[in-house]
Amino acid sequence: MTDPAGPNSAAPAEVRHLPLASGREAILWHWSAATADPIGTILFSHGAQSAPWHYDRLIQPWREAGYAVWAPLHVDSTDHPLTADYPGLATWRARLEDMHAAAALIDAPYVAAGHSYGALTALVMGGALGDVPEDFPAPLRDPRARCVLAFSPPPPIPGLISPEGYAGIAVPALIQTGDRDLMPGWPDTGEGWRVHLPAYENALPGGDRYLLVLAGVDHTFGNAICEPTRAEAPQLAALADAVAIAGRFLGAFYPEARADGRLALDARLAVPGPVRLERK
Image 1 (cartoon, rainbow, N blue to C red):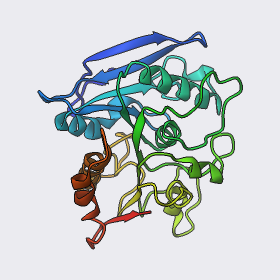
Image 2: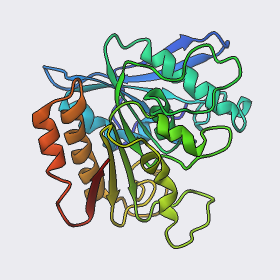
Image 3: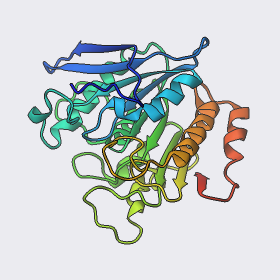
Image 4: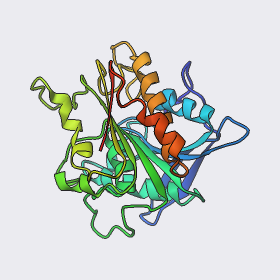
């Protein structure tokens, strides 16, 4: 694997290799909470072709807030030693295997979180009705996933999830995008960022689903997460806004629903400006 050490990278507490029934190993990165009184655990799924260490600007604030973080290195990562063996949709089954293997190590309810392809992975752990790989040995949903943080989830894609599949989201969810958040390879029709909205729009109302839209924000917050080699300047102020709203969301719904946390989160619903928060 590529050495992740760098000016914005912190080594994990451990890297664990778990044998899977499929014959390969799940490679799991783990960071412990950086506080004396931990709150709980976040299970994070990275974007396609990326890796856990490209998300330090999300993971380290979570650690500092009191969360331990588990993050698989998925086979679609360009840093995974077996990436050439898993073309196309073969990565979907492998991602689900990774997430369920990591979840089995967590002995309490947890937060499912992810970015892009990883956001879909996290939403499925929280009840979204993704396509079930043939002979997959377990339900896709894990009932211990208490809520979901989904940064820039993909639109419905055949073989992954149907438009109706997002109606299955069964837990509180915060779905984030930006008004420059274009899907790689998808044409920009002027409002191409709206392809990320079905995860929110197709979710059933009344279940504490939130939509966060950030003005001027693209798919990777510049190059702040996922793709640090991009030439764009990192959109760090917007990323800080996203981390802050996600923190309020967790304060409202994890590890249990809290009325005071809900009030603090919902106070942002009526605030005008570049951070737009909605609820259904």
